[in-house]
Image 1 (cartoon, helix red, strand yellow):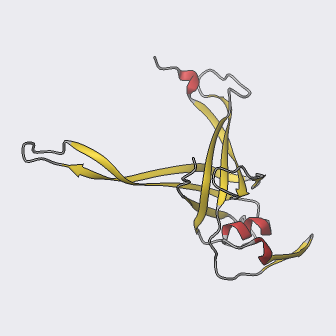
Image 2 (cartoon, one colour; image 1 turned 90 degrees about the vertical axis):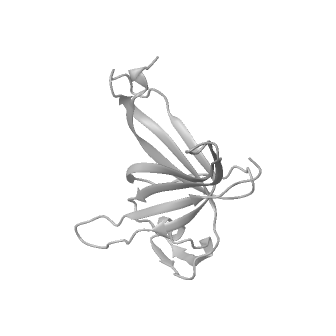
Image 3 (cartoon, helix red, strand yellow; image 1 turned 135 degrees about the vertical axis):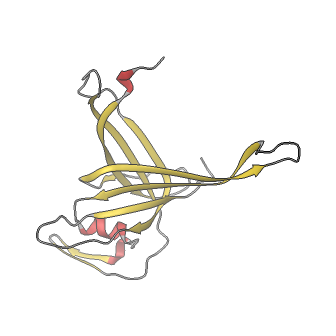
Length: 171
């Protein structure tokens, strides 16, 4: 039976942790303000099973699967830039507030990413303030791309990132 109370409005908080080991839990740090929406994109390819006896396909067998996480980081901290540019921690030097980021070749860096959906209210009934959070965890992800970043006096420096999720064989 449909339940309209399950339709919720709300945001997602994004936290990231260095990937430590298969199925190992890292220490998550929030990325700060995020420009919505936070999206999860699933795609797959199937082998289309056909036979001589039927005109159409008789089945679809998955042969590949990909998950991408997309969000825009609004807080232009050098640590967020380091993560977005796939740089190692050693590439950021200095002390607060004078940090320097050395832009070098990207490296093979993996992260654990956590989205926590925090509904502000039910869309229909107005129940709240928190009808329950929803947590989605990517055990092993790598930055796949960053959209061009504009630096202007009348616009925030947004780091719009796409992460590719890798298969963690230990899960």
